[in-house]
Image 1 (cartoon, helix red, strand yellow):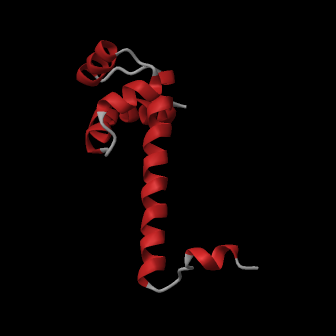
Image 2 (image 1 turned 60 degrees about the vertical axis):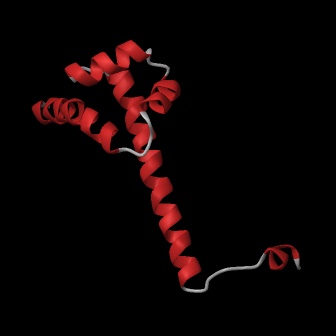
Image 3 (image 1 turned 180 degrees about the vertical axis):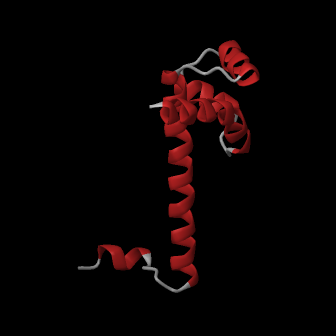
Length: 92
């Protein structure tokens, strides 16, 4: 059980850096999480997000990672010629 607490502590400590590395602007995260702006920046500084806040932020960062992965797959499809022209989509 102790490892769960250590993992949680590490997540909370690492979260501000992960937010900074994210392509989402802090104001977008603030809006998506409904965390008041002053509270958000205070939590960033003191590394003390609540469990609920951390869960919301982790979901946003996971969505960003998934989105980036899907974009990269799409770019690979284009690069490798796996595309359909607009007209082909509706021709049946």
